[in-house]
Length: 50
Image 1 (cartoon, rainbow, N blue to C red):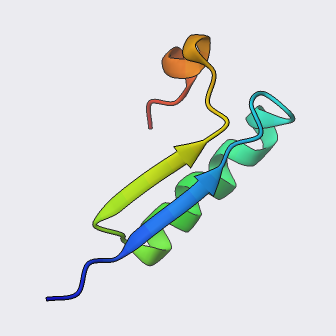
Image 2: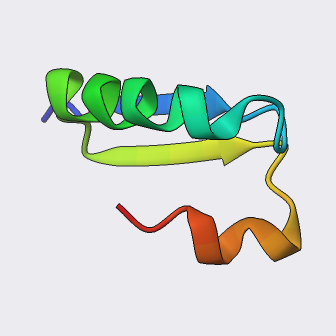
């Protein structure tokens, strides 16, 4: 069994509005089984919903 894992560093809020569509596109392109995020701020939960 192969499990695809994608780890992304979100860099907190640095240019997030510009990077968000690229992040979504990358996740859809690779279609991972598991996605992990680094440098996520607690108050960023509300902007991460795709």
